[in-house]
Every structure is written in C-alpha cells, then in structure tokens.
Image: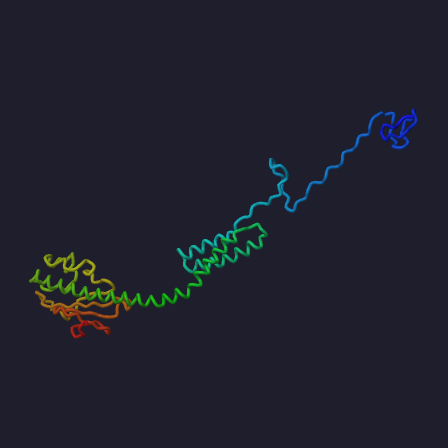
Length: 270
C-alpha cells in the first residue's frame, strides 16, 4: 500500500489514479492552482483618465471657473463711485443677481459668489443713498446759483467803477478826444489815443465779463470831440447770470434796476 501524494489517501501500489481525488498518479506532477481572477476596476462618479506619476488613478474634477457676471457686478459697483454714478450701481445690482443665479445653477462649475455679493452691496448702498443726495442737491443747487448770481452782480458793479476810473484817466490823457465811446479804446489795443490805453483789462475791453454785457448808453454821448460825458450799461447775459441791471455816467454814481435796462433816472445802488 502507498499514499496518494495529493490527498494522502492509502491506495494500491500499482494504482494509476487515486480513487479519492481522482488525480493521475502516472503523471507524477502536482496540479497547478489557477490564479483567482482580478477584481473589476473601480467605478467613479466623475471618471477621469489616470494621471501618470501620481501613484494611481486620480478622480479630481476640473477647477471651477469664475462667473463673468459676478466679476462684472463688482466692476460696475466700483465704477458707480468713480466714473458712472447710479448707472453703475444699477448695473452692479442686476449683474450681481444674475451672477448668483448662474453660480447656483452651475452645480459647482462656476464660482465667484463673493464677487457678486460685493457688487450688490456697493450698488445697493448707492441706490439707498440716492434720496439723500437728491435732497441735498435740491437745497444746495439753488443756493449755488444765487451765490453765483450775487458774485456776477458784484463783479459787474466793480467793472463799472473800473470803467469810470478808466474814462476819467483817458479823458485826461487825451484832451482832444475826451471820454472814450468804445471799451476797446480803454483796453490794451486802444488806437484812437495810444496815451490813454491800458486803463482796463483785455477781458472787460471785449464788453463781456462774468456773465454781464457792457454797452455804451447812446443818450449820454454827444458824438462831438472832445466828448464831455459818458454812460455805460451793465446787463446780465441771461436770467441765470444775474437779475439786476446797472448804469454809471460821468458823475460816478452807479444806479440799478431789476425791471429793465438801467439809466440816469434809475435808483441809486444801495
């Protein structure tokens, strides 16, 4: 009797096959175990190709992009305080809401909600302050206009005094001519009597200065040489530049009125 080299069962010495494990004893070899089949590859929700050199399969998704509307919202919000008041604020609010909605619907493909929120804050802050700005403007603008008109009227009075002084100096320097009928003769380019020029500045010599027009009063000039009298009117160019009309003659007394062009019979300036 001998034992089966495979299962240790006692068998006959001349047996060719083990009655228990059914192995062929004549082959005198051990059966080779078949290797187990490899496990199936893992399945991922968002499969990507394996990256070489990373030590295995990488299942990282592509990086999220920044929403263009969110970026535009922030830019518009900043522009509202720099170059485009109110219009930029409205654009910031609209683009901010669109950007947030776009990011929410992208399921992680887009980012930039912080940019959109910043744009919304900047836009809403300016829109909320609009009523206050309008109230301030409603109070300040009329005051600014009145202040400008008062400054223009004061300048017109000062210019008439300058003209009066210039006329007296001109008549003294040019006794054969007397008083000048044209402001240009009192300015730097006077030609009728060069000795009497440069009595007024070049701006006043044009007949326009600080919202007022300066014209000669024909009734106060005789047209004869030497001229013994003069009269000058100062009238606002438009209602927004002044409301009072002024007049001065050789007496040096400045008169004013608000109804029409002033003359020698208008009330004296108080």
